[in-house]
Image (cartoon, rainbow over all chains, first blue to last red; front, side):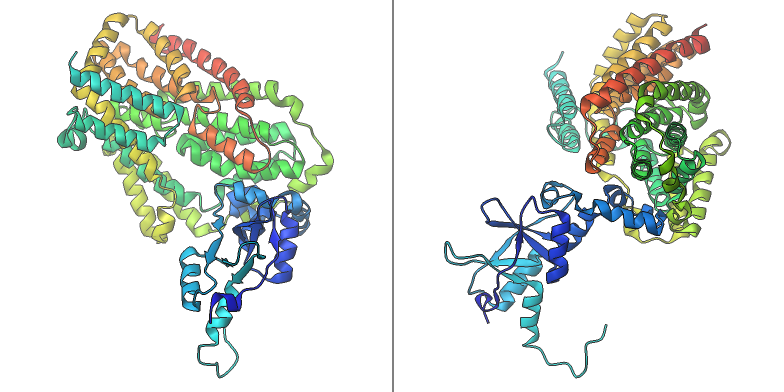
Length: 161
Length: 428
């Protein structure tokens, strides 16, 4: 099994995508990270879902987590009114946020090579190198894990936590 | 003047310029500068590690390390956030009263914690309170960081330059409290008046928003009550150790290290959490600075300048104190006050040694000028830079000139008031 056998297309976001739109995308697709493309549509980075979640919170709660408990329910609900104020570009520009460069793997890479490269880069998503001009194709962590599991002994019962 | 001295001075001045311009990380500059001093033969391993006059001041390094561990654990308790929200609720949402309470809390905390830690704790909760009240946080953040620089001047452990001054001058915790705390208390009252004049137009009261502050539950900010109790007990013991120096004869660094050790022992936190707030880079920066300044001591440069200064001052110690006060304030507004004080401390020591008791107030002039001068510009103190970063991240950017506009007023007033204090107290 090669990378090209597992690749699929993914939605991409841009710098000006709001945190709210990015969150909707994550909620709909269950992706662990989103691919960010530049103005020409070329994929260049991956932001993690947890960083998008952080973008929806007020900055002072990230600076001091102990403040999160002081809100009552109404105040907590009010906070989400500002969740869409920020854009993905802010994540890319924030030196405190680690944004992964987009990992690229060869189309003929084996599943072991893909798994090792993704682990080494701590990447949630990797781009599969394709023909020039061809649409960008990707591998996600869940796709790779699904593929690995096909080589493992089947479970006797349902998975346990 | 020998080639060695010329080279050492070139390294020292070059390092100073690079630290001031922040083109290169300051720790890199200090360590490379220290290495160059060794290469040109201005110091050696014995001088660096074992000389009390020209080596690394281990008292300073280990006092900072001990306090960083204690404060790092204490700040995990949430007590500072509790205090700030409690104060805002006691003020019933009135902005200026909240500002006064936060300024006082910040100044008092800063006397016992380092300024950067204090503002890191107080700024996020300030942003929360201001958001609840729908008022701009910028006046509060500026007032707090300035209060932090003022309050930190009051004690030996409040500001790193004071730690250097204490070690070089052989001054105790009580010496700082007795000589600096009175003027700092006065300056704090004056500063609150200045806050009213500078910020009152931006502090609008909206009765409808008050409920949003009153609904905050400050008790939820305290995450670990047993940890809080243990940390407060140890901090109390450490402060008692500082105050009782003349009885127990333990140096502040030893007291802080014993306190840190005790806290580590009784809290049994993970190593990662214990050392999370230790700024190793800052400690290495200090070490590099001490090596560079120590090299100039070794080569006799500091003694030469000290002699010239002693001759120039003669017996006019009030004039010298005034010069040191205002000169230090101007310098500290432009460059980091830590390298400045690290350089000036041995010089001041020479003046005090040759002048005896009448020259002793020079230490207080140096501390007041260097610490209060940090308020002058947005880059005058590390705490200022940290608050500007927090404000920017939270969508309320404070420009260099916005800060400096207020900073120059506050510095001019506070430093000028120190002059009559020095005169009345030591030279009348």
